[in-house]
Image (tube, rainbow, N blue to C red; front, side, top):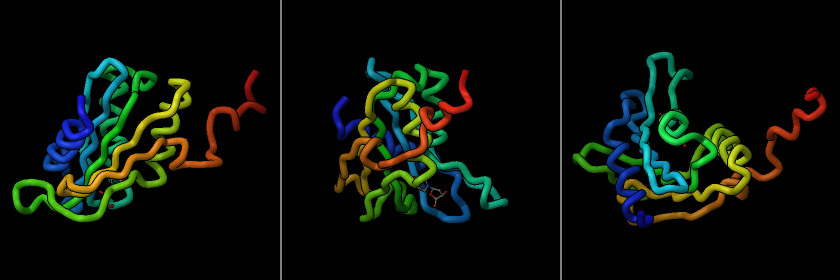
Length: 148
Ligand code: THU
């Protein structure tokens, strides 16, 4: 799948967000090494701190569809859905918690994961690798002292 197609899926997924509190809609599309794709969107709650990010939602779908170890590339887009399609200028890079969650999949896979961060309108894209987005991170090896 092309970058444009994966970003288009993330932008479309954002329209399904449940975000009545922030009104900021985020969509995420995750592609596997075999080219399968799952999507997710943010899911907010009246108890604000219980809200779920789009990336976490899509990661759960990926876990069930093809497994976290098969994740190759992730597109994220965030913005304003009010005109019937996602719009907005600022690129949406994954929050710190989502970086940590994506990093877990990279450790499981034994390789880095590509991140495409798009603005709402899909006209701007930043390209990163998850290991660059969360340097000096906490990961499975930090738990070595309590493992058998
Ligand atoms: N959000 C995401 O879904 N992903 C991110 O990486 C950044 C933030 C959501 C959480 C909340 O529902 C809204 O965007 C505003 O922060």
